[in-house]
Length: 444
Image (cartoon, rainbow, N blue to C red; front, side, top):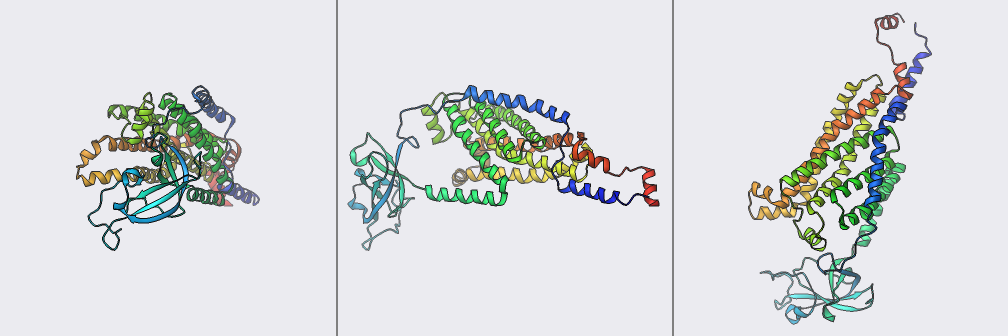
């Protein structure tokens, strides 16, 4: 008969594997993982040092689009006046629109009423200076008294036309929303939430201090994106999930998927002859910095844009395989892979749909224009603006799909090859399924 004290011990082991920490991997496996990741991490560090830009290059402002001098201001007064009484040619006007056939903003005699806003500059060398801004009744952006606004400064313009309202100051609502987000992350995630916010801040620092200035300095956008994405991946994953073998497997899976996305993106962006210069923003960038490879910038955007979703998929798949192994340490590599890939299929369906809808939502105004023009689906897809989004979406989705089997297979190989720590104890304590064991259990 089986001694009665063994049963509680086995139950205790099973409980530990169901809810305890991940089983540590063997020294040999840690060396194998390190042999892959240390050269990659070293290459990222070398890339950061060699390509570090030291700040964005200076240039003379053009006064076009975002490349304008701006100051803060506020609306101190608004008067309703007849639009005919205002000389729009001599005053800054918000909203260059054509008069509608039926204008709701009319006075009692049918006259169109415009807003004559008095705006006071609240920052810069002209702090305290006021100017008049005329707002048409059908302008998309209306002003109100006391509203904080952003004004553009044109030093070469006539004195009365040097300042004009370009946007609304949204700093307070945006800061408040960011604060609510941070509190929600910390309250729900606790220490993990704090680490996630730290990783987010460091990732943003890599983007603004390295990736963007290095591209402006003339470095190859693809090389900069690969180095920057590698740095973000290492920082974010290890800070959020710890310096463990589980995280390292997720890093390797993400790296392989990023390489695939880079290869596919480079192939199809060149094959489809996508220039990357498709709108006012990219046109302005090309005008200011003609040495920048715009197609390379497009590929860099594909890689960086795919990284965030890839992290989610690879970490989830790795954690799923680790938990399956802890729940049943007797599962072999094939069984772990099959169980993990079943979870991954559900993840693929939701993530790909999310990625496609995200890009479709961003391009919705453009799609509406094609719908208004009654263009055929083939015509829409062939235009460079839409083709760029299609290639971006499909290349990223292929990388996401590929990351599931790759990461699942890597995780299954690592955990099933391990026979140390908690995993070894569970393996040793599992019942041996032999004929003799069954006969003993039957006699007991």
